[in-house]
Length: 316
Image 1 (cartoon, rainbow, N blue to C red):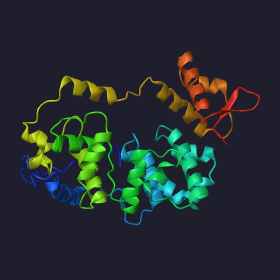
Image 2 (image 1 turned 30 degrees about the vertical axis):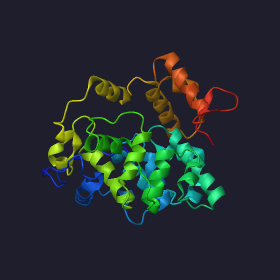
Image 3 (image 1 turned 90 degrees about the vertical axis):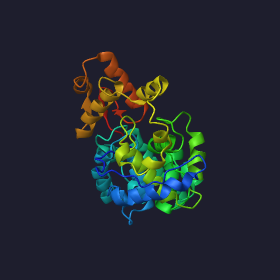
Image 4 (image 1 turned 120 degrees about the horizontal axis):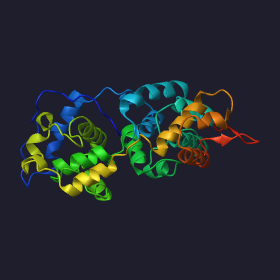
């Protein structure tokens, strides 16, 4: 589960055993899982009664979006559309309005398409098989594995940015995870030999979100400190190439086409009727960038031009 941020526990921890090169990779896991049981956040989709649909929605919403923004939206969505069948009957306009300011609204329409496919192919029941999940619209490798693991308890590795970073530090001694990610999928899979996939995976994610963060890891409160390969190596500073790669991955927002797209979408979400072009022109002063953003929204199917031209609205 991605993009979670919250205050970390303040009490120093050193529960993991000291390790050597001959120590099994799984030796750190009991301390990790114990830490999660004591310090993991009470997120609404972690409730035992959460359905597979609820897990799927939470994963899609959490992509590149802070959990603090996702939680209230998720609760509203699950109350309004508790299963794929209910969601598949919604209009695209209602879906985009309900998505609000979560960002990347194409995710909302892909989720809508996914719900329709679940109804058509699986009688409205979210499948548990990774390959069947991958065949659904908008579902990539991470999301398919996350749903299989967290909703159905399938013992598959779930590797997001947080997991990659924790593995790179604790097991490989690297400050940041190298590219590409495929190799780490196999490495993390080796940690799950005891069948602890769901428990271990969520604990790895939580540690990366709360303690083993990208820029300033809080090693003094980390349950893996005593056995962490990066700490044992003296906590070496990241290389220039690592820092450059990290900086490149941080996406700016202010002044980008994405910001302009968001402003146009906000106008259309709040409108009860098609919006004349002059009203859209008011959202951004740079004509060329504004027109480019509007054209991209039309191409993505997030906006439609009303017959006759000159007015714009959300899709039907």
